[in-house]
Each structure stands twice: as C-alpha cells, then as structure tokens.
Length: 375
Image: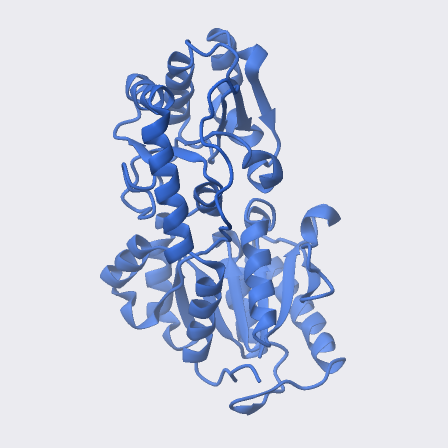
C-alpha cells in the first residue's frame, strides 16, 4: 500500500510530532509513506526525523486559487508517478497496484482542495482529517457530493458524533490520535521549585486569551518568580504583550515561535494553559497528559479528552476571575493536582496510544474500495 500524507503548514510545523509518529507506525506495518509539505517551509521543519528511513519527502507550492491549485496538483501527481516508477511494485492482500498512491490522507483544512484534486488525478482514495469542529459542515457537504471517494477521519468522539449527525455517517472513520506515554517519573509541582506555565492555542479569540493571562497573573501573585511562556503567533494575534506589560509581567513573560513544535522545551513546564475553545484537537494536550503536566483549559464540549477533575481542570467561562480561581486552586493544592495529572497519564496509556491510532487509520484505509492491505 502506498499512502501520501499531505500536510498543510500548520500540521507540518505544530503537529509535526503527530504526523511523524503516524508515518513511523504505518511504515512499521508495511505501508510505503510519502510525506508532502509546502515548499515555503524551512527544510528543518519540512523534513521529519524519520525522513528517508520510513518515508519519502516531497514539496509542493501552496496555492489558494483554483487554476493555480490544479497546476500544483498536476506537478505533484507527476512527481508521485516518477517515484512510483522508480520503486518496486507493492503487492498486498488484493494484488498488485500500479497507482502512484492508493490513499491521499490530508492533514489541515487549507490543503483539502489540493488533496481532492490530487486524488482525482491519481485515481486514489481520499481521507480527510476533520481535526476541528469548524470543518464538520464542510466535510459533510463534501461527502454528499463526492461520496464514493472520501473518508472522513474523526480524531475525537465529539467530532465523530457531529459528523454523523450532519449526515456523513457512511463516510466517517473513528481514528483518535495517540501519543507515547512511558513511566511517569517526574515529580508533579515539587515543593521549592519555580513554577512554569505555557500558554498554547491559536490566539484568534483575543478576549479569551487576555482573560487567561490576567487570571494567570492574579493566581501567581504569591509566586513572583513564576515563569510564563506563550506561543509567539498566538500572543501577537491576541495582543498579549501589551497586556503583559500592563500587568507587570514582562520580566517573567517570554514568547517562543511555534512553541507547539518545541515539545522538548514545552513538556518540562508544570502547567499547560489552553484558552481556545473552538473544538480543535491538539496533540500537545495529549503529550502534556503523557508527560505529567497539569492542563488547565477553557471548557470545550467538542474536545472529549478534557474532563474536569479527571484529566484536566476546566474553566467554565472565559473570565479572568474564573481563570484565577482555577489556577490558584491548582497551585495551592499540589497533591490534588498531582492526582489529576496521574489520571491523565493513565488515560493516555490505556486509550490514546500511538499503536491504536495507527490501527484505526489502517482500518479506515482497508475499508476504502480497492486499497490493497500491506503485505
């Protein structure tokens, strides 16, 4: 089986770890993986750690308009055909395939039109990752008009229910994302250690981000050495630097570009703050669970992994006072917070493993017409 993982700029950067883990898992199961990313991205971002070992990387030029997009799709299709001709034919449970790829799996809504055109040119099946609630209506409309060729991958139970309710039931495949969770060796909120909080998200809801930062500032008054890091793009979009200046936080407030891709740094913090509540699935939340971080997030019914008091602490309304109350409770009751962090870690180990994600994805591929199983 040949699979093209087509990622837009967001997934190629912020969800680089997720895509990498999936590609390694697919390759381990005998799938030949091709990894396609926008050519505007730096080489260090575009190439995954396993490039040239578990997958082949190709670049494409992102195009917004129809005529240009069709040209990009034709060039990418030609590149894939050349790759197919230069490698031995893949023989699977259904026989030999002569297609350049069997499945085009698209990560990122901005790349859906390109993925649709590419699958048409190649005669390949199409899988679309419905990673946020805002894509549900568009996805349901698409399968109504392009039913035979498209499978909608639902990374969360809430997304899956919404897709089915929208009329896309025959084309929905459950494929919850997974991460690695080894033994939990870190001490959670250890006494005498400087606290560190990280704010992640899109920053589109400036008022929600402002409320979270103001609440964090109020809750940390008793810990003046607390360090606060924030995704630079989200902070600029939400105007957080001026708010931090007004709150007197600049000596302990730092911005980091593409912080969600810097998991080596991010996952050493104590608390993950997520002010967004737009039904977006973010694997950084799963990684935070796996690493023993305490997640404090705005209530989001479309993200089922966020369960108040079980896996996270949830803020019911985007109000600075509510944020301050919840974060303060996390800080002053470290024993109770540690219990939640350990429960979240156990949740990952039992229900959100990488191996399960790979199994779900392979199952969805197998359900598509004429897709040969791995040898």
